[in-house]
Image (cartoon, rainbow, N blue to C red):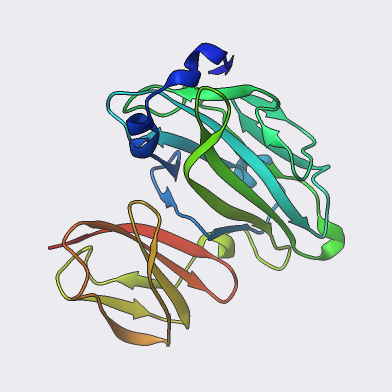
Amino acid sequence: MKQNLFLAFAFASMSWMASAQFTLETQEGDPIVDGQTVTYGTLDETSASLHFYVNNESTTDEIYMKVEFVSAVNYDGTNMQVCFGLCYDPVIVGVSYPPGTDVVIIQPGQHQDSVGDKFWNYNDGGGSPVEYVFRFYQVDGAGMEIGDDLSFTYRYDPDLGVNEATAVKANLASTIVKDQLVVQAQEDVQIQMFNIQGKLLVNQKLNAGTNNVNIASLPAQVYLVQIANEKGASQTVKVVKR
């Protein structure tokens, strides 16, 4: 829940700062990774709302989170609603939410308890696509930014239908892999592979058909694979490399 920061928290240990981490996912459980674009073809609140959770990866310490409205293309945020603890509408480029010294506090091993948290655009862009870039980041008890951040783009494209906006005609042959990813695509796609810290490890353009992506040099662990088409639609899946 949104709470004020107090200076008493300023003396958190440096070891805690170094280890604190967070991840982002939709409330349906789909990961949202750094650099991802989420595209919608409708302004309807039910269909175009990106409901999300911020997960605290620490099992021992609470974390303090904010989200910054970084930039906008073809509009200024007047008809953009951001709910993170509380709802803010309109939003302003360069401002972080919750504003001021307020933060969203997330308990160890949990996500925030405000289930209504979302991003929702209801501006038609005058018939042209609208893009908003947001950045999640963590602060310490003194309000200073720490650790890695995570940025993503919310995009409204009026040329996409409701179903087209979420459909990528490609999939992985298996989510348990060893030396290669096998991608079966019915259209040209871009594939990106991230570790759980959000570091980009693979970035390749694939043609329609069956594609083999070599990942033999990567260590055995869990990864996130994002597949996107040329229309801006994308999907992200978890992969286990053995």
